[in-house]
Length: 86
Image 1 (tube, rainbow, N blue to C red):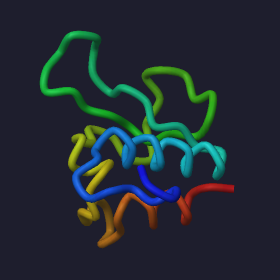
Image 2: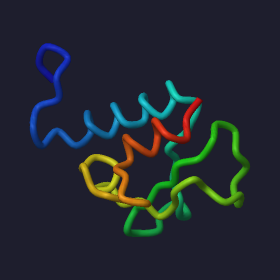
Image 3: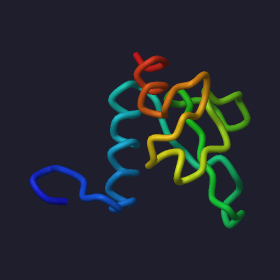
Image 4: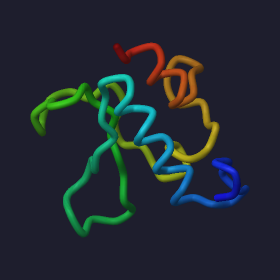
């Protein structure tokens, strides 16, 4: 990262930014599948939602989290976080 901007292709930094954005909105991006299961997937939930509850969005790939992909109802993950967050 340079000057607080994510460099293109810096997946770990972009992932961290999305996790932090979710946190700011009272949401959590957490592992969706079991530990060790591949491919690794994630879910977006309200903070402190017990495992097994229906997520806001589930089965997210790394590309869904770090990319600008349309995920649900024509919205990107960032837009979903802003819509469903506090």
